[in-house]
Length: 327
Ligand code: F6P
Image (tube, rainbow, N blue to C red; front, side):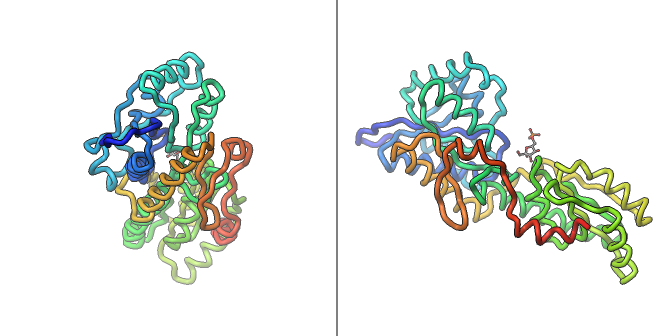
C-alpha cells in the first residue's frame, strides 16, 4: 500500500461509540483518499480503547478490502470510560508517538468528538470528525452516517408487523432507538403510515389519541400501529393503555439493536465517501477539531465547540408533520 513516493504525514482512523452502517465505507474511503493525497493511513482497532492499548495497524489493502458492504464497523468500537482519565489519554498519546501518527479521523458521535477534543487540549493532536450515529442527534448536521440504513431496517420491520397486526386485528406498538432524539421514530412513523407516534420532542395527549383511534375504529380501521421513541419510556405503558382504553389485543415490539445492523444503503455508502473526503481535506488544510457537517444539502464543517455548545434540535418541519399522530 505504501507507494514509492514519500508520504509526509501519518493519519489514524478510528470508529468509536455506537456502530453505524456507513462506518466501513467511511474508513475505506478516508484511508484511500488520505493515501492519494500523500498521507500514510493507519487504522485503530476497537475505538478509543484501542488507542489506549496501542492497537494500531497500517491501513493495508487486506485490511480494507471487502468491507464497504458490511454493516457495523470492521475496525471494532468501544465506549471507553478510561479515556476520561488523563493517564490513559497519555498512554494513547505515547502510542501515537511510537507510530509517528500526528492526526486522527474519528467516525462516531458527540461523546467521541468531545473525548478527542480533550485529547487535543492535552496533547495537541488534531482530529477531523465524521458524524455517524443512527440517532441523528449531532448538532450542526442534518445527516449522520447510519441513519438511512437504520430507517430502512425499521421500515422493513414495521411493514412485517403490519402483516401480523392486520391478520389479528391487533394494536402493535413498536419502539425505536434514538436515545433522547425522536428522529428515527418520527421518520419511520410517517414512512410506514403509523396511526400513533410518541417522541420526546412532542407533547402527547393520550385522551385525544384515544378519541381519534376510537373514531378510526368505528370507521372500519381494523388494526393500529404506534411508533414510540425509546427516549419517551412509553413503549410498555402505551401498549397496556391500548388494551385498556381501546379494548384491543395489543403487543409491544422493541426493535433494539437490529436497527444498528445491516449492509449500508447506497445513500449511506455515498455519504460516507463524501464525509470521508471532506474530513481528510480538513486535516490537509490544517484545520483542527472540526466535524464535517451536511446542512441544507451542502457539506461544511463545524468546530467541536460549536457542536458542544449547541443543543440538537430535530427538523421543525418533521415535527409538524408528526404532531397529528401525538394527539
Ligand atoms: O447511540 C446509538 C444507540 O444505538 C442509541 O440509539 C441507543 O440508546 C444506544 O446506542 C444503545 O447503546 P448500547 O449499544 O451500548 O446498548
